[in-house]
Length: 48
Image (cartoon, rainbow, N blue to C red; front, side, top):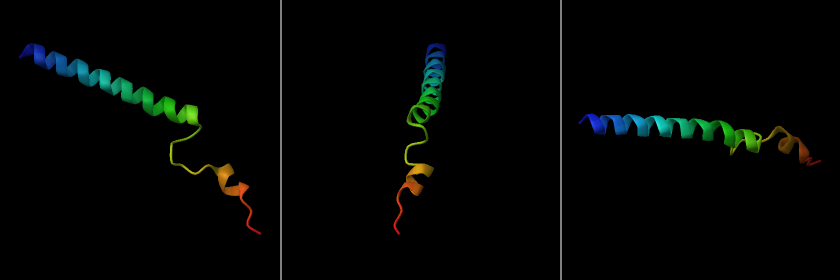
């Protein structure tokens, strides 16, 4: 049972690191979180 617990701990730790890096690096490379409306996109359309 010790092997299974160690394997689960290593797997969980690895996934946590991968998700953390992805959560930080993807919005950084996109310039914001996906789905967010950019401020420049709101003001670029003038309807009058």
